[in-house]
Image 1 (tube, rainbow, N blue to C red):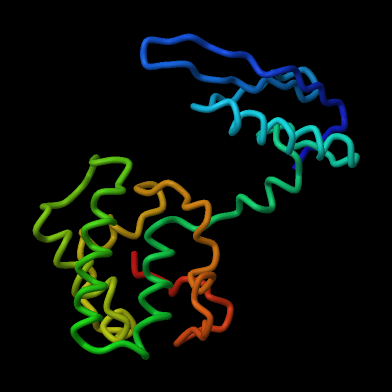
Image 2: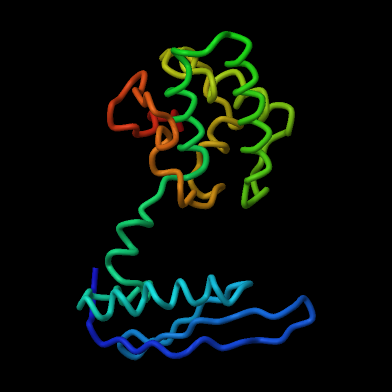
Length: 192
């Protein structure tokens, strides 16, 4: 990772558009200019303040992303699919069978809605069945003879989901967070 301390942060730029005003934070790392647009001035100001604070603390900025190193550490996120599988593993041992089914159905609906690409996507019915019966079913996912389908492979592909920023720890809102398989809360390995 290449870093630099050569950073310049400019004031927030207001943009008048047909859909309403937007606000852009602009900054330069080494010779590369970066910008990020927000819907509200408060969000833009908050992001700009984070950049300024990092620069004042003397943090290095990454040349490939334009962000401070501290922001990069915070953005090492898992995909939505990985988070959903870890959530299933976390909740499985303590919930009733009906709740498990409800969780699987809800996670299946949300997961299919969050796909970023439909390229190579299998039949919708097959995809939902694979998610519900194997991906979001802890005992079935751990059996070595679980059928590997193109639907399950597609759903688990990192290219089909954006990172989920606040999903690094599935038990973050659960007071008694004990994982069923792993204390590190890492998603279970999926068959390709």
